[in-house]
Image 1 (tube, helix red, strand yellow):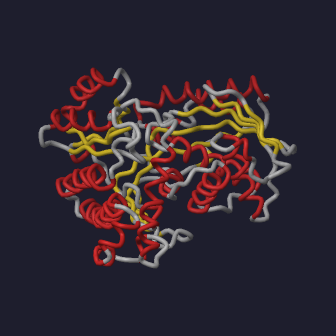
Image 2: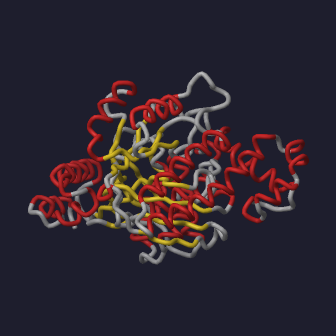
Image 3: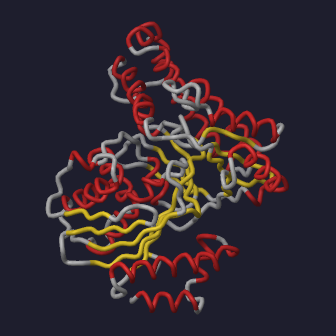
Length: 424
């Protein structure tokens, strides 16, 4: 379709049901305007012919904090905040990206080898994803894309994973006959981030962005993660899921993130294993002195967190399946306590003077006073906390917490059921 044809369909309500499903009925009008603005930008930059529109959600981690990289268990969900793109295919070996709020860039995919100077940049992700899909034997070519996102960068909602999965979804639709599954798109995104972007990460972010709804993911075999979908509406049970951005700076935190899997795997190696999942907590405790001496106390604490967090994921899955919201919230609190005490990812050890997450948790616990739950969200060290706030207190809580962390710090989340997809 042309940009004009899609805009006409947006204006006459053709996509209202789809927009309502993803964003909520109250957001349809605003989303119509958002998509129309994207199409106008795309037409101005690249012309209005042969246009397709794609959407990939951000994600929220419900439990399984830093367990995926050691083949653990995770509970996560897609959310209504997403990254969308208007795309035009082209025959040239060039990917041209105009992303709102960023400088335009072009990736020449006539060469698909990693480029050292591109590390830690968006072009590395696009090159890596194109390379992975081309290696599978598909005739990957270029495209022109205009992108905008409501998944805030550094918010703990996986803006980078959403972009990776979006790029894979675009190429899958344009040049791969849609033959890659959501799990394969997630794995391709992880590959690009690990090898081309040069950031160690597990697979949880990408899997959660690629799949719709709540999912329990078992990474015992990372090449074939087992994904169990769950259906649950927290608001119907009296609680609103939300996050608060404490404003921390992620720029120099890669070593902190990298140390978590490195320390767990160092302890595992002392046990003759490659990852913690290959052994049990009892096995590690039996080697207590050796691990303390050779890997350090923090490594052993992080291993303990890994095993107990896996147990919590199963308990939380069971609580949702049995519709026991109070049992579920007890485990949310326990997960947060374990991340704080054992995993130790609520602030960077190199910058102990900056503890926005700790402050937000302290303030929120005082406000909730035994109702709902709060925990560190995502990778940690800086960024966001996650909360379940009683519905009747949401407005009051937002006013309370934004008095400390600024307007717009609190974001209400809505679980999105639709996976990464071509929208129009």
